[in-house]
Image (cartoon, rainbow, N blue to C red; front, side, top):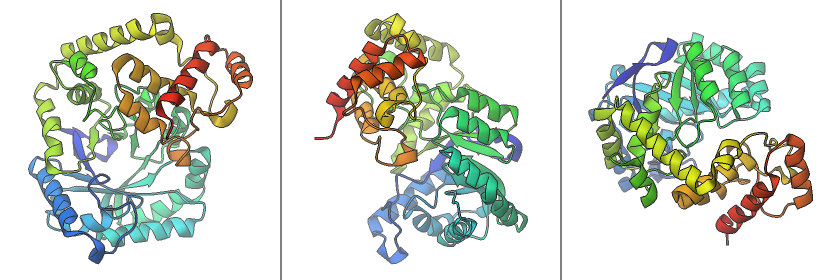
Length: 384
């Protein structure tokens, strides 16, 4: 295992973290006596396998259903001074509700101290207002009493919002999305580095492209590495990035990631694979479209029907050019279902004249093609 200094926390963070989302039993809260023995055994073996490999950062959240409750007895089996424990609590408008969630989280984990506490999901300006208005005061009270060491936040929000949250200088680290197939948050990563914050990349293998099950075309383009190994190398060659979350569902899920460490410094291959992918995308999509598809798009709020243009066009590009249809379908069908976690709506019924006017008003170069892509994406991925 390799380790990096996690910004101003000075913690030595493994470059892979053991995220607690995929191995838990349920998204609903469960009592310990409701946990299935086989599921708990798999979770236990996964956590112990991570620790054996030197992955000593274990991350979960109050919002991950039974994860905290299931992790508690397993974490207790590990030497506490050799692990980095993190949980996350969603912001609330009511400070009493926010503090109650912190108490529940600690109770579920069976601990009186975590190393890293995160505000989970600063995804909108309203969330940031709640945080600066009252949540930070609650957190500081808990930090002064010794319940946690360092405060951070996680986010699925837009880049400008993330940068505003970083600019408060209230946080020691950030959990955000940035990986090869979605690099829009690079400015936020750079802002965090400028403030010596820890940078944790959320779900680079799943939300980063469903790279554990890539299409054959992408496999060929990424050779001699797997797409997942290529993405690991891409992310970790940025020294501002400290750790990538592996949402392991079973002990074997670590294997391919660990294998990628041997050639982490192979910058030439990363550059050549990037060139091959970009050449294929240009050949399939056209150089003009590839250069300007995401420029001057109206925001979700400014788009008729609050359609998420940026992500839908991105999903379509990856599917059409690289065969990433399963990834596009998975992400497209989440739009409109979990509000701020997956913002914006699908491209179902919309007024074409209004859409064209919005695109022309924002200055996009090719409204006709945008509209055609929206129609095609919805035809591909709408639910039956």
